[in-house]
Image 1 (tube, chains in turn cyan, red):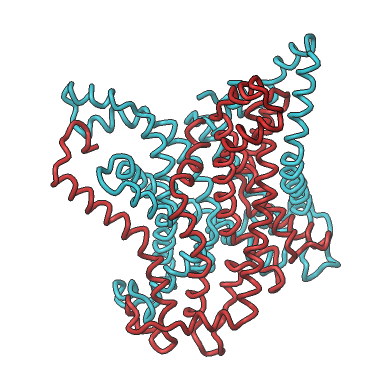
Image 2 (tube, rainbow over the protein chains, first blue to last red):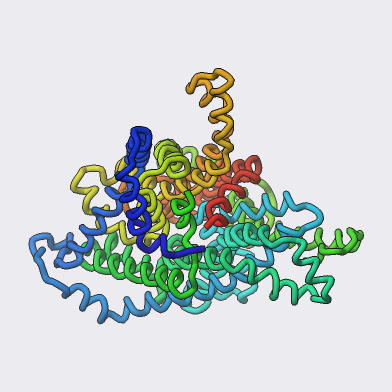
Amino acid sequence: MSQSTTEKPEVATEPVAAKKKVVLSEGKRAERKLGWWLCAPAAITMVAVTGWPIIYSIWLSLQRYDLKFPDRTEFIGFDNYVTVLASPYWWNAVWVTAVLTVISVAIELVLGMGLALIMHRALVGRGLVRTTSLIPYGIVTIVAGFSWRFAWTPGTGYLAELAGGEPVLTEKLPALMVVILAEVWKTTPFMALLLMAGLALVPDDLLKAAAMDGAGPWQRFVKVTLPIMKPAILVALLFRTLDAFRIFDNLFVLTAGSQGTSSVSMLTYNNLIKGLNLGIGSTMSVLIFLMVAAIAFIFIKLFGTAAPGSDDGGKR
Amino acid sequence: MAGIGGADTTQKKVGWGLLNAVVVAYALFPVLWILSLSLKSSKTLADGNLIPREISFENYSNIFATTEFIRALANSIGIAIIATVVAVVFGTMAAYAIARLDFPGKNLLVGVSLLIAMFPQVSLVSPLFEIERGLGIFDTWPGLILPYITFALPLAIYTLSAFFREIPWELEKAAKMDGATPGQAFRRVIAPLAAPGVFTTAILVFIFCWNDFLFAISLTSTEQSRTVPAALSFFTGSSQFEDPAGSISAAAVVITIPIILFVLFFQRRIVAGLTSGAVKG
């Protein structure tokens, strides 16, 4: 589980490459060339569609650029950043996004662990459980979002009765709870699958030995299973946290960001597509990118999460 | 954890059965609910009943009578299939190189695709919106296919390279020793071994493209290239005063069908594909 390779991939390869340069055989050179040719289409597409736009959005974020007033476009330095960072709407969105992310990922972790244990250990109907729990993962988020929205709509839905006929989606806190419910429903199975892969790594013998030594089920879970699963748990958390942070689809359908329920993605979309303000939209894009980078950095540095696939190259 | 060391008593089986029932209900409830809504007629739509009193296909005939939905369905299918094919072909090439060949820059490629997998997609929406308008591909198929390929590639590369690493490549050598040409060795030995991995990846990538909403709604502006998830949010009832819930539900059920079929037929493969990249890390 080394994390050094992800941080600076080129450092890992350089010494090897330098050594080989001396004794590079014909075959080796052909292999390199083939490797580059095979990777070229994927690499070029990824860089062209993400690398260039990112640079371009940094450039756009430094301009006053409103498509409603195109003639007033000019370079204004960091003014957009000042505007965004001074805006209560932005901070509310950051806060909402953070709360949604933390709460939904925490619930997903607990439920996902339960589901993973069920899928891993079930004596009967394991296939059935695995098949049906894939449905929330596979279903179009928008479809699930509409299902929840109609369910909570007074008159139309069955859940609205539970709330005593109150329109829950028109108030901030209840609406956010519904959004969390929708997110948790949709992504718990994915979390469970990642955790189940980690569970499969826990040797049965070890659990049996612990049971012999008198450890109860809970002790075995906490003292044996969890430590072995730690890498899998961290990877699952990293994936889901970054994914939850981009929350957009469910919010769009459930509240459209009204009553102060906008996430940062929702707010960016509203400024960009509805408001046609490219400068402000790009500024928010850059800020979101920085926040996501910070989250990934924290996971990888502090928790020592190995990024999946990071040690691929190192091993071979 | 209950299974360890215990006997498979009937009581335990019943317990597991109950747990399974809870999981199945949890997973299916929202799906069944929207199915039920889609089968209600416009009169009973707002009755709040969980199960429709009478089954009506009115909503389905309504959506299939509009070009809006048919066009969106065609867009969804076309865009998802093209993006899937391209992403899987590019991904297969790159994953083969990552799994089998030694070349400088390999770790960089893995690092970059990891970055893209974690990338906040909304950050790309503003620049792509502007760039695509400049290139004249805003609100066209390529305008959506390009970002889909890009975000599907990391998924494809991870899943495929994990699969490719499991293939016993010595078999290729063995086949050549037995007198097979390289072409035959590939066709008869390697291709059949690699096919399941490629197929699984294709399913995962297709699901990703099929589900996207953010790009679909930001980079399109007319029926010309709007996919179903985006079109759904513009649905109105057949008249201004009608609740579009029925049409939305019916359209939602239609686009859920392929996902349900994939899950039913390829459950094992999807699980293997989703977890392959993650455990190895």
